[in-house]
Image 1 (cartoon, one colour):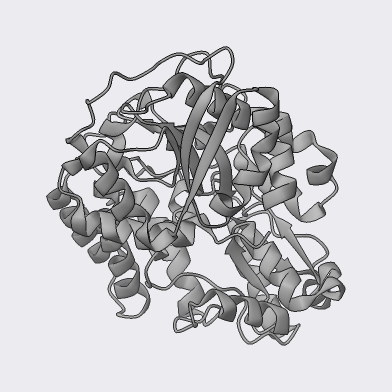
Image 2: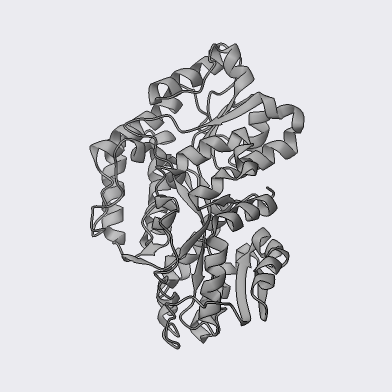
Length: 420
């Protein structure tokens, strides 16, 4: 449960991508023919790169795979998050890539990835997770673990405010947040993004739940200046206008946890990684004071899905065995076992039937949310559009810019960025 949030890490990597991506992913991408077949039995040496906690835990975990495939040896290299982009860029350009890697949303390198063989079944995975590995209409990455946003709220303070169940609609969410202030003594009703880095991504659940889309159907243009986006951002802005949310909240994760534990801000939208931080800071006694719930619905309840995928490179030296490992890591029982080791949530739906996941009441909301969760388009351009979206939200919340004007400007910026 102590693994670093993948999405938080992606903010830094995405920034590097936007600044340094210059087409070098194409160089060396075709130095070996891609393998589209899975070996019947893995054999020989398999090299794998993985970031952070996953890279540290995999060597021991993969001994089970090695035992099931005598003669194979998996060599895992743990890559620091802050150097991941540069490592991949250098390796791809030189044609010196590992066989497979954990890939946290870097579509700039898509030309180096081998297509996923049809024998690897993703039908039982959450559709939103599969979309994160679909680039240019081709499945190039296999979902490994998922990250999704849901609502956290203080049940003890909610009862004090007259609420014995979570809010189900946008109107109920705003009313409950206000009641937590007026009746339960909270300083702020809910924590919401106000324009800092990642605000656009963090708030996407609002326009998505309001029927908005980031792009048109064929992904040839951005669709940000729409009535659905406008009313969603008006709804977001209302929390700040009514002083229900703090426009100047400390954005550090530790501050969010502290404010939640003290009751200063008893509601927030976050991923499953927050559960571990709450447990570590609040201890076992705090477990009965909060709950999680699916995001309240507008026209729908549609959250953001992220996580990490697995890729095999075109230039892999042992591609058939690498795909065999990807297949094994995708199996429900393997994903359930990996959750017990790492705390990473399974991308395969049937893995959620494992008793270890069923037994945790705080996980049910994430399982439900994953059924409808969506991912942004897997385009390099989205990094820049997202940064422009952060600025638009800040101008609305802190600068007082009318939503219509902010979205008009955002649309113009996105048109200028393009869709490549």
